[in-house]
Image (spheres, rainbow, N blue to C red):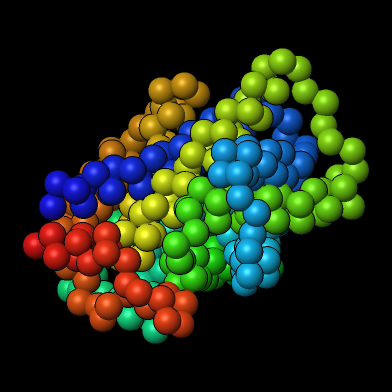
Length: 307
């Protein structure tokens, strides 16, 4: 059980880092170049991890890496950008908070991970917590924004599940680097067509781009994919709810925003949801990967340690 909680802690680094990017982006980066912001986040992170992994794709990874790169980064970042332009932030965050349900729903047929009653309780608490944290949007909601946000959610969820299903003995650092590089190249192409030349920033902005690329992307996605290798997908989805929680807390600490009582209650509910789900034992068949792939021994070890 102690080993499993270490994996939970490692996985939590990802949504916490992503939540921190809201404050950094809002205060230090140009607001009129979101696509370049995504491209300059993904591509440098991919090249950095590739330099560390020192390994080129082989065999099926020549097509798997671009597919995963588009789902996890390229298409996802573009659709999130479209949704952010059309929807209130509270509505967009609420739709993306459905990630635990999407991950668990896809993990059942594709990974044979059957959600448990304990996980269902955790999911209900987590969704209620996020609703309290981000608040409820009012007024008319553009259908195009809802569709863009929902497709982004499904794309990233499918990418996460396929990342787990297609895992083999290739080092995680290498597969993550290939995905980021492929997705980053696609984002550069879209950014050039939509926004033109990359934005000019000062030394502070450059440092912010480097921090987001290294910490909130390279390190964060290695941690995220580590969680997907060793924990049930639904549990990883609930850990991801730390993303909006971190954004709200940093807004209070750095941006001078206030924390209302319902938000504080929502944060508590999210933390309880993660604790409840992390203790749940996934009633799943042996993990399925690529045809002929052996189940990960580490995964079996964590499954046995569940209580």
